[in-house]
Amino acid sequence: MSAGPSGPWTKNSALSTAAHDRGAVSCNNPGPFVFPNGTVILVCKITSHDSQKIRQMAVAVASDWRGPYIVRSVTQVFGEDAYVFQQPQDGHFHMLLHSMHPHKVPTTAWSTNGIDWIPAFVANISTTEGETYPSFPSAIALTQKCNGDESVVDLGRRERHQVLVDAKGIPTHLFNGVEPSPTDLDFSFTAVQPIAVASSTLRKATAAVTTTDFHLKRISPTTYPHAKCLDGTPPAYYWRDGVNDDKDSSLIIFFQGGGWCYPSDIQQPCEPKSSHCSANCHIRANTSIGTSNGLEEVVPAAAMEGGTGYLSGNASRAGAFADFAVAYVHYCDGGSYSGTMTTPDVALNGTGPLYYAGKWNLDATLDELVKTQRVESYKRIIVSGCSAGGMACAIHCDYIHDYFSKASDGAIDVKCICDAGIFMDVPTVTGAGNVMKTRFYDIADKMATKTSLNPKCVQEEDDWRECMFSETALKYTTTPYFVINSQYNFGEWEMLAPPTSQSFPPDTTVPPVDWQSCYPSLGKLTPQLWANDCNATQKSIILNRVAKFKDVLSGAWGASTPQNGAWLNNCPSTHCQTAFDDSIIVGGMNLREAVNAWYFDGKVVKAVDSPFPSNPTCPSFRVVPHST
Figure 1 (cartoon, one colour):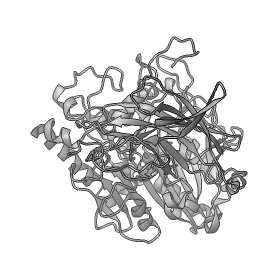
Figure 2: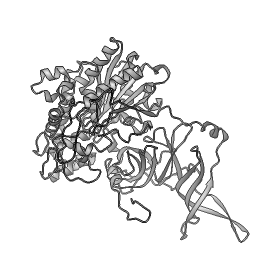
Figure 3: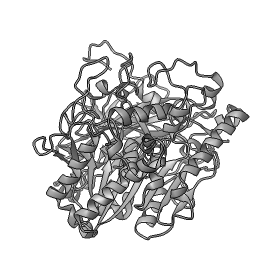
Figure 4: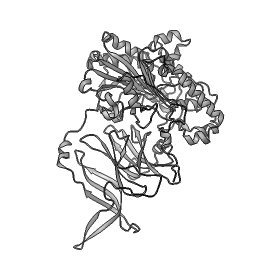
């Protein structure tokens, strides 16, 4: 990247790192789609480990083109040189690329959300024999006019697809890098071909689809003077109306995630975009998850956590949840919406003031939903969120239930669906201590969270700060809840992995080489690593931790609590799964089916995977050596 076309140019490594999260060894030829708010869906080619070097398309997402990128899917689309555009009349995404197996020909794929793609054909990647059927011709007849003469040139290769669209988003011209036939000639050039579009398509495209977009609602600092983001700006949430029979009757309150910051953290030197940067509250206050400054007024669903599934507004992706109204709560307090401070704190090793007011933000948002959206008249409300937002879902589930029960005289049915919010109270495997206990206790003490936590939990636990852990809060939760989590959630791997001098609490323990071989950072455990790089002691430690994970969540999946539900896969590095990857199956159901069955059909859903690597539908199984 460069500030100008003359350079200097520097390499952005964020993309290649993201691709590695799903076992790829390379990520190149990226095809971006950029939303108006700057969010990027990036389709890139990854190459498998096997001798055939199978080229497979992965999809990464980032809030900014600079990254960091998070891989959301490794598709069953095989090829390279992807170009992605969105069809204006229905919002669907289309991909142009060329296949590599067994023949290099133009092909296509389509998607309703930009994450999960359906190819025009399923390539037989285990053989170099057979036919690959092009979606459009791989050769075109080109008429040239040279000195008044016309001749026809047959093109042998047609690659590097690019599409020109008009002001309405309608494709008008196809650009390709082409090579004459035979293809052993020493030159290539660019071909441009008009695209024929039916008049009916032009008529349909005059109105853009906007019904699934989210609209910003700011909290008044005059009405709610204690409600503040870390930097002192007022909190905010995004709203989308419900439709059809669920209009003005059904609501999802979804808490955005984004980790935490630790008031006692002394700022350490860190690289730009480092995950540590936002763990320091002073640094975090100047990011998108520490302020409400710079928020877009309108944001497409696909740019939100869960926005390609649960919150998509698309019935094929969300099931019956598609018609629900959604309040998407902006995360800007660093403490899972739990701080109760009314006076600012002084930033360590930086400038202040800092405001730890997450619970005030929560209360202000709930009050505004009643005042401006009239949700006290709704029939049902789902409390939800992912990661730090999933933790907020767990620790505030009963509180929000009681709030709306009081507001509606008990008329509203409230349930909680918490995604990737289980961050266990466990020590690291390297003797660095219980890192998460130190972190959550620091939040509890310095942000004054005691009065915001489950009161029965606070009363019963020997140390009230344990109620910051979702696993502890859920023991005392009486509102029906459903837990979505990987038993090998990458957050847990961060806790098992040793800290560094840039983390909180700081530690300079040298990471054991054998643990780094067993599982790389962010839990990128694969069946091959488990079989070849994890020794018996490491496997025992991992399996014991998984056993504890199941034990502390027995209230979700145990037979004695039929009102609660769980969908717990064993897929490593799967986090925030309300995007609904329909390809992962647990207990005979994908996540969308499981949540719909529990919530709408009233079925008992206790879907729990056996230990890794027993589930072949996990993403870590998707980019593996292919036999010939």
